[in-house]
Length: 80
Image (cartoon, rainbow, N blue to C red):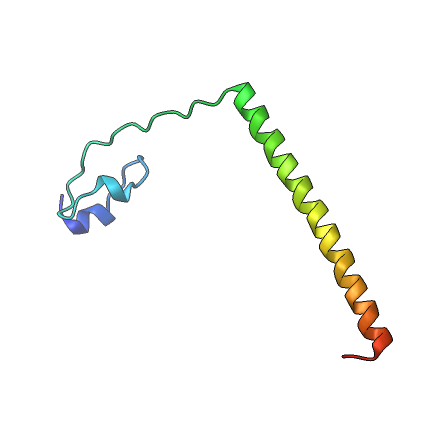
């Protein structure tokens, strides 16, 4: 198969750029291993992400309150 024929290939299999070598020959594809998801693993991930989200949100609230205090003090002092 030449380089021109690769572009004109009307096969039904999806194009995989990694499976085509520089001269246009196809290499045999290696099957990808399936991920090993478990219900406890998924729940652990969701719980840790939710906890991280809540900590980030709490920190954002603290930062927001500090900036509000700084803004009010600058307005009272007339500093721009």
